[in-house]
Length: 239
Image (cartoon, rainbow, N blue to C red):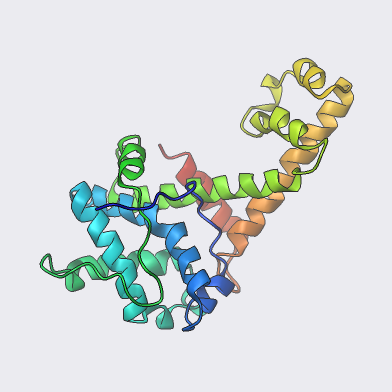
């Protein structure tokens, strides 16, 4: 089944405003944002649940077609809690009750189809840790949320003179403070070691702020952001 590859595995933060916008008939862009965000975590879930690559691709495509055609998002909202949980529960119900292997793949509705890249999906899936289906979905959600935060941070440096500094410093986001060579970093940035230390401190602080904002935007009102951040960290460190 030919497909147009996704540009990069973006997992755009699922702000509830995007989910709510996707409910409306003229919300093609919002719906496609959700589909592009969640296709791989759901694909990985279906694969780990025991389906073949071909069936997993068809099931994921069909799920998003049903999401549109059956208007399932009408029952999604911030008052229902986390959107990723809503979507996973919907997928589980779909796998149990909705799928018939003889049914044709639907490509109508408000979107055409989710542009799955089968080869890329399988290459990524082959590198996944040996986790249960629910755990792999959670991990992929967390990792791609982390990637989205990094991209948002990089976008803030997309101006002359700052882009090179970002690329020099970004590896410091994952290093222990004691393992950062500020001498080498200062040379790469053409600044003093003191300035390099300040720059790294600010970069790490800004990354934490953006990551916290990204996580907060996926929660219902009143849910504790710190608890969710601890959950994300646990998921990322679980394999």
